[in-house]
Length: 415
Image (cartoon, rainbow, N blue to C red; front, side, top):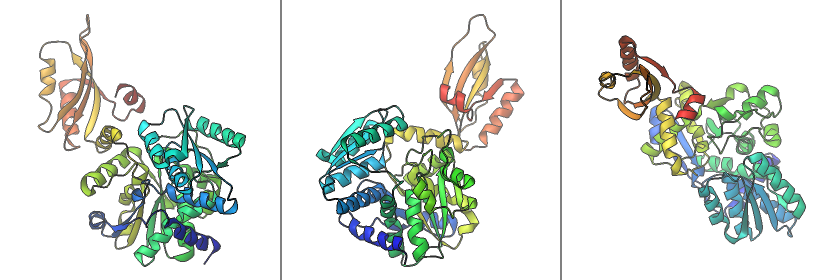
């Protein structure tokens, strides 16, 4: 057994002072769908509803063992890492200063305060995370505190490896495949580091958001690179640059082992897990499950473990998730329609709608001295194929229209 594996075992034992192992649950719904043994490692059920507590606790514990006088820790985070550090600070009775962007939702701020109590101070600064991170590091240097990195830290990676330790213990055998979400890379580096040493027959797949594919970019370049643009929807994994230490531990990963999940498709998975299984997952927490359709025949008859990495979902985002899921599934579309300005024109259009078509949005302002006016219309249906029949009727009737559903710029401005 490697030294890293031994350290992961020690980290796992130490974590029992905080919480019992998170469940490893066989999911009958997914197993039947894919003809495989699909198990979910429920990291959404830790005390802070994400695996981040493991790394924060381990790093803090080891630093205090080395320096018992260490009593002030600093981090920058807008989500799960902040909550994990806050929980660890309260456990150890040390001071934590947590820097968060000014734009952080109040729900995340409140949860961090709840987990940390009087042990933590929250500083809101910067409109963007890079500004927040710079401010936190400058403050950390000024007060000579200890900076707790979210993923680019050996002890943090060691703590995240405890997920792999628990998987092997709970399953009682080596899984054929483990599917892991990737953001900064700490979880993937830790779990694979342990399982490759103790279960060499296990294969891995890595799933990252399509709008934040930092591992894909790093593997292509042979080193971490900074993405020019990141889609922040999958906020728990939308990282512009994978950590140097995690990537060093993942330098064996081949391009074909990485899957990129479209943000809108992730919304379909989130809704399905909520409605069918009653499991609340945040976007990053749904990444591993979202990749299963792409794995298809490859996993039939095999034992597959998907790590559901977090469940810190703000239900105020649910309308957006539903909207994106409907659009991805082809059940909702938006059109700009050129409507004749004459009596009966709207009635003619409405008669083209099918029995399952429903108008979800309609904006029209009659223009003076014009023969035509523009209509913004959103339509929901129960079967994606219904839109082909609708557009065929629009074409036959001579209506001029434009489908703007997938036009990112227009959709963001108008919808």
